[in-house]
Figure 1: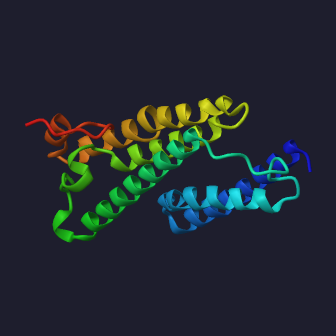
Figure 2: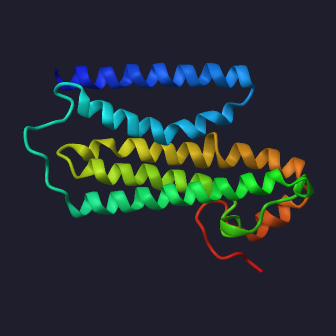
Length: 187
């Protein structure tokens, strides 16, 4: 199978799975279920490419480079950061006493959007792993676009508007806490 054909198979598989997830989200009235499908979706695509004839490029596995290791470490850090942030938010929201309050402990003490920061790290880790392959630098647009979307379109900017209007304590939290990059809170 040619490389474009393998890519098309992956694209069609991703479209099929995400369409099903979207339909389920409409039925449940909860678009957040899509978030849980991103990571496993990438893993399924990778395994699928290995199973498709011609999907694994080359007859000998390529050598692992320092860039691959750095990318894997960045991906792992992003995954851990996002998973921990999501778990902290889930626990916080589960408590009726926290209704209308702002989560400002754990990772949320150092960044207002640790889950988005972790997601961005995932994308940059994937980029580093891709960059070590011949022509892989061409994938730079993917993490750059995702980071832009997280910061300026669907992530931080959109969410902040709603939080500022729905939670009175959010303005104080925003004044002392970094929006995206984790950093020590201002006093």
